[in-house]
Length: 623
Image (cartoon, rainbow, N blue to C red; front, side):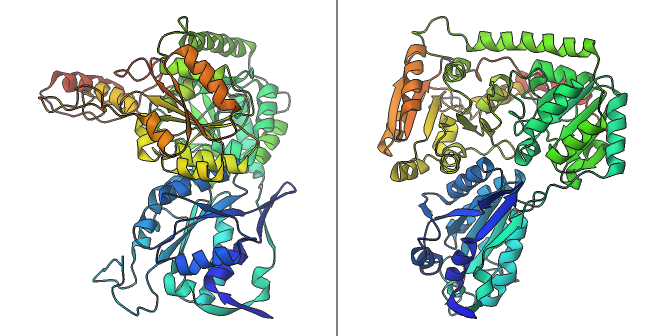
């Protein structure tokens, strides 16, 4: 039996009946499709989404990059068991997908991209928005998506869709390979009819695997842990993707090995768990970073060991340090010349706990990191505390006010600026999915659309998008989408008049904060004049969002509570106390390699280079 329909109609119907299953939980894989329509997809996918509106929910986006961010937020909140599709026209709509695709792939989060493409039949050449490449007639702007996609295909004939669609689903549901998947769809092919086999539209379930550890690798890992005197676990995003938090807690309690976390792994243990020592790396806590410096064994669980995590190769100072890498991806399992333990995080931790039955770290080690953590939490208390409630808050006091309000059901979303460092060092996570930091790509503009995606995945939760003025100005457009659909996200908009994080970094590397402040230009060519008279609160209100202005700490507490109780999209706007410093929290506890000018005449750069050379001399290769 066959069913005659267009390529676009067939694809929509196919996507509507794809499911994932893990641990007995079955989820619809493609929960909805986001779309902005132009000539490249309006008559194809646009028509198909109308035709099958009862089978495939649709969300109207305002920016193509933002639509991908929303889909990624949905996927992360769904533990990668579900995601959204995104369709755009050919041309700028398609190329606007590139940043979002890179973010998804770098973070190992599934998203399906369906950009329109130029005519396959070439009735006119070139057509509107066609890229002409003299040496390759089959290249279009969509080829920009190849390096940032885990799977890419261009559907030039209807019959190509069947194997390609199946391959796309395989990649989306593979915990090792997942990321952005792109099916480029020429606009004429989208509208072309074909006789599809009925089986193409049958429900299909994709099992998300939980592979166990190889016995030889498991024995080697257990032996290394038993022989270590100062072991440290670094929990990465793989812990969350695997839902391994409970098993990690059992492992940590049984062995008493302290657990530090990456940005993606923060929340793997609650902040008050006895073995949790906070964030690690350049944005980490003093407790975790000191343990990393002295560790003789680092047990990485689901981490990619990015530059911030390793403090540019300077953090792990113990000359005898070795690494055990529990990771579902062999590529990551072999990093830092470590002992690979290639397995699903939950399966591997369970097996490792069994292999270490009866093993516990020394009492003196437990006492050391417990006391260090208590001292760190006292520093956080001091940063959060606001003795004078009628003054403008600092950024840490903004976080302190939010910390005092939320519970384990709230979700915080952030990606860029000075907030990631403050949050990684100081935020007290109360649940495994409260802390949503996109730091693989650290993409400005991610927070608001991602909050919509998270809220769609968890409508019962309070979802907060924490944004500075710099990231807000990159992409506020999806506020309109939240208003249109009644998606009650909360936006905490912090005004500090520029790129605070990069301003601080610029100063530290001899750049003198040049071009990082939102100020009028001065006579000397720098932007050090008065702050710009922009009103971001009014901007958010003009897009339809309810806005609460907070001038003082007292105002802020009241506004946050009101926003949390609101059932409509609500923004809390607050200007922080200092515009010329990053935020006032404890400084970075580990170095980050940002090269400094080797020659310069300005004293700031000369001094920065001297400091840089001292730090870079401590960098090492772990072999």
